[in-house]
Length: 610
Image (cartoon, rainbow, N blue to C red; front, top):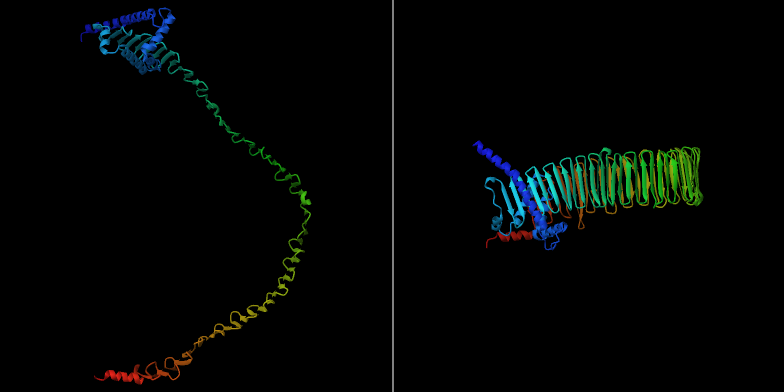
């Protein structure tokens, strides 16, 4: 590339950068003068500068419409960033689009021609909207009725309109002034923003944001606080402090100190030393383990404990003491005092009740009873009576019931009641009830007798038992002999040889002489087995039968009158007769020797030829 061409281009660019802004500024000044001298419909030629400003404002509201609102929303609230400045430039382009008229052709006809040597330089002037734009990247200069914008991207941005002005040097500085909004930002050292009634102030060490009935502030890292309507909070990290509250509740924490509130309930403390609080009429305060206090105004109760000393009150009772040595309680009609181990005293006006206990004696008395206790003698009088020298001698009873008892441990006990008595000693025991029973037990024998059932019994050590009643009598010599006889039964056992059981009423009997003899009787039969001889008698339909077996040699019998049978070796030789029928056995083969005549004739007819 030719160096001369490069130098010419740089000179041309420098001249344009220095000369054109002056021309634009002069043109803008002429436009402003024209605006000031040009009468409006509202002013009617008054010519005052303040009235001109009002005319411009009304003209801006009527003619420009949404133009100034777009400037306020887009350019006026830039936050100091380079991109925001670019957004403002875009807003100027929008105004340019609005001021160019109804068609693009009309705006192009009215635009000023661009010098041929400008290169990337662009200059526009719209006479009908009194707007102009000068652009030589990165420089942008725009102006119009009531507003002006200058930007050097991305280093500088300035805008001024009827609402105020904005100055931004991204990313470190931003300055804004308008009717409802002010901003001063030196990033990251300082920021102040006002938006309507809200104010925000911030530095690297702290901030403040506030408005009507609310605020938030902080000084890092010392304190943080805020309030919203009926809620607020405070945080002080160096003091380990936190507090939050609302209309219904609150919480505060400051190191070991804490406090909570919920409606009428408040609790607080210094952990772990002090605990306190209230819940409506109830309250408490605790300093463990030295001090405890609980109270309820509605119930009228209160309890206070200071070390071993306590004091408690209720609507009906008051108590205090030094635990575990001294205790005192009193009510409207009673008192109680205890000093361990010296005495215990209690008195109640109702029933004139007195109680006194000492290490030497004890007294308990009232209208209907009295009790005396000493180490050697004890006495009680009331519904029952007791006289004792515990734990050996005891005497007690009930005069109303007619009972009396006395006991000398471990030797004798004797008790009586109307019509009965009981005596127990190491040698014997006796139970007696007049007209009912008598029982006597000793280590060697015992006897009993029932007068209501005409029964009696005797037991002699170690195993003899003899008894009887109106139904039976019994004789047992355990474990060998057992005999009992009743009205309709009896049994006799000489274990383990002889066993005999009989039911006289039902005609059953079983007799065993083990192991040589067995005999069993029923109403229909009697069976006897003696070693290998077996005999059986039967009774059926008024006829008697019998049979005899001598195992295994022979057997014979008669099942009914007129019939009989016999055999040897159960079939080697035998004979049987049953009415008109007769049969022999020879070598275990049956041979019929006689049969009824009618049956014989029938067989002959069937055998004869026809």
